[in-house]
Length: 187
Image: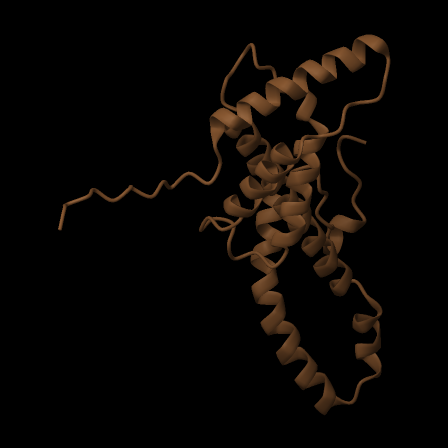
């Protein structure tokens, strides 16, 4: 029996040379359509497949795997890649994989920030909702049960609110007590 070396399995899921070739074709077609004043040419199937694979594989990385809205992240990433497909310049780089991976990564970060903002808004809305106003009418035994649940949820979400407000100094924090009645010195 001969010792035939086995082919080493490649870790690469995209052929970057073929991807580059397809992008050069697309770039040429795009420049021609732009010159003639026509609509954008259709995206080649291989390019679309590569973009989808990049987004799906990046979503499996440990820093993105725990989010419940990963499908939205992938959708945003694909949309962004298609939106900026024409900006790929083969004269500047021959690595479309890196170009689109960066677009996908940034789209993921933007979606995470959007979701954090929505969670912040939901929490603030809950704090200020009619639920708080109806507490006055509650029986004491119901009130204690509600307080226990609210305190537990508040502690967990309080950290999120603090982090979000620390990152966004433009958010005005509500004034408390006497501060409500004293005007700002800047006004």
